[in-house]
Image 1: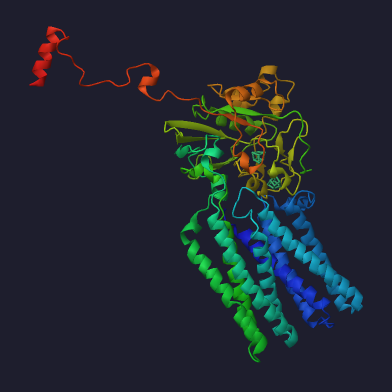
Image 2 (image 1 turned 60 degrees about the vertical axis):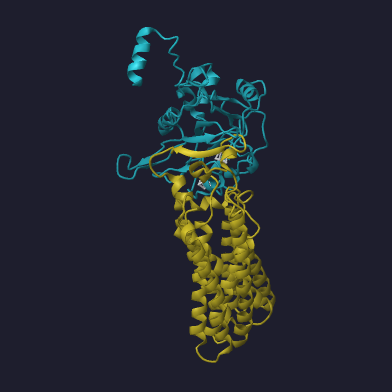
Length: 313
Length: 250
Ligand code: SF4
Ligand code: SF4
């Protein structure tokens, strides 16, 4: 699949944003903070990450001005559900910010924090389901896609929250979030490696004989292409570059995911330089997810390519 | 609404005969022509005569070399367009309701006025039936020429998809595959018509008729199985040929 910059940016940024909002909600619920000095900057950063992500996704549309129509089909479409819950999350975020600024009662803040947690988690779930529900793309239609997406969103979100905690010098928050992020990054490596093993073992999905309604065991080779120039299908679904560099890029993702929690931990447990270390952690984490997302698209093969590159089955 | 209607009795679709298709692309060209001006058109091209032409087509004709399981080699011409699936995931993934399946006859359509061009439906289609219009940036797909088959102003014999009418070998047939008594259903029964990649669960409506068994070798056609180059019998040949044979054998 063509790794479109807009979609990669969208899933990376909004993943991190909703991950951050999820952790912040939990943190508020755990009653660790009654003062808004960590919560407000975290809400602001979450808002920016999510909004930039959503704008990037709108830029992906052929007709961006009609984007509002996408809120109508939540009964059947994961994309529609995601759009709705993403906007609802933003509304909850704004309400929570107002409640904190106004010094609202503990109970109100708790309700809003819980709502934020649930809405953020649901948004991440819906985003992952958009991909995992697509049968024609075997690399997406499997049980590893949802955990992979969720754990990376949670890990990057935790990295962002610990950077913010370092910024406002919230030592206690910093330590807890840093430990959580260590566990999440380790988990994300496990999940991604399992995902890659799975997709490498499960091949093209459909063989050429079945795609062409020929008897099983027929050997098929393209003889004449249906068109002389590239078309939408080949541009959108015929991306092959990643096969060449796939292994190396996967190693880079694993390396970045292993390195990312180290500066986050350093930020939490060293006295000086916490902000710088936290920033490096966020940078490594975001870079890891960008490369991972690029591979997620670039290495995914759509079964329609069987019609174009039919090989003996 | 992008929820699928309950499966109806009428299921309009195409039956394509892979035995007689000669890969001439007449169907694809007729489709392009009609749908460029039809109700769901235009069907745009970009830079049509330039260095990198790009355009939306609703029908693409592939050609393959095939070796059958019995070891016989053939060519196969394979027109590929929307199969108007019963389990059309292209419809259910659509966030806007622009993609829909008509309850009355199962035809899958895209409303060009509400499509946002998110391309998700094209991702959801295993058969590559949907292409984005490079100018309008909305999704285009086979309509089974609803603007012909529904058009009472046309004489009955013209109320057929453009591709069916254009095919010079009559390899394309249009009709109701939900009615077991229809001509297309009988043809499918008689010739063992197949759905494409049924294991994906989309339940396509269109059927493809497999190539008939070919007469592969000279012997199958009634000719001598092998023309023997050492078979010249000098005793039976005329004196002139005997003389020529002697001369040339020297
Ligand atoms: S062939 Fe593709 S576009 Fe047509 S109904 Fe089936 S899934 Fe949808
Ligand atoms: S491209 Fe158009 S028709 Fe296809 S899913 Fe998106 S909005 Fe629906």
